[in-house]
Image 1 (tube, rainbow, N blue to C red):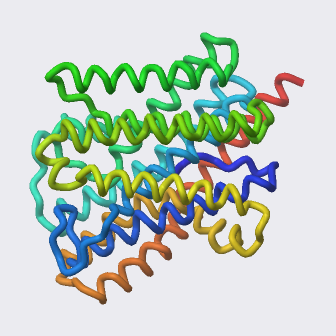
Image 2 (image 1 turned 120 degrees about the horizontal axis):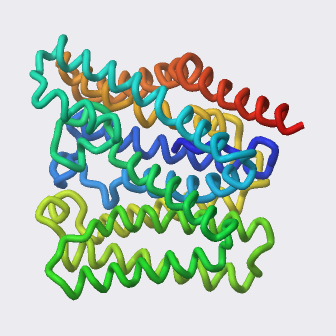
Image 3 (image 1 turned 120 degrees about the vertical axis):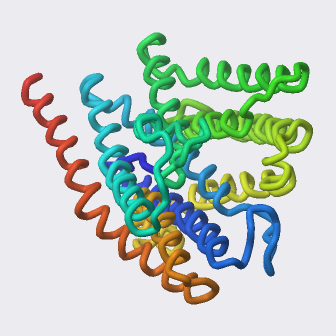
Length: 353
């Protein structure tokens, strides 16, 4: 959702298209929820067989797994990598936090509870995890995103490179071990989060396949292993040992369909990456602003609900306003900081020369 596409590789345009469709999945899911047509608890006039918000998030993590190793290997230094990551995440995140905080506090009149804890929890994307008011919708995924950055970076430093074969073996083995622990012991393990991290490793595998690290036969077998392990994680976390909240919001069949749609979306664009009809400029542009779409839409939709809007008017106006607002926030919030991070890289190159 927030990874940079390797612009020097034209064949990777399909990655932007995946992000564009993933952003649409999340936006449509939430727009239908805010409009009152569906509910995360399966209530409302329309009940979907899948949660398209979850599908979009899963596709986003596949993209992150594909792009971040590429970015890490191209980085000129440790500071270059982390400056780009922070510049990509925090400016828009803090902007949306400020906008949402001001809207809820001074327009909707919602009091702030435990403000100091709330502020620091929000700063590190932890509020939705520790039970505090979360002022940035979707911030729970940014914790996983940062865990992926940190984990991959530490592995890269310790192993002297990505070493994809070893990394994938370790990731799959750990996933299986944690899943067995969740079955064997009466402890609550966040298997959904584990599955998202595994999706990052899955995306890394696709990157390495495009680089020729794996053969065609290995491509099919390893993909089947990822499918089997991911499905097992879902079965244990959402079917066999779900929390009461998960059982209401995301039963196993819905979770399986959701992650399946996310994976199919990624592979659909992978297969048709040379098709200008499928990987078109409109989807690529939407992918460029996908992080803005992801963070902007909750505050806009909730504000429209507060103003009394619902049904089809909210659906149409909310989606339209999100696309317009996301275009503006990308242009005036995201892009300047992305450009600044690139200038930092150029300075490092100049010093090295």
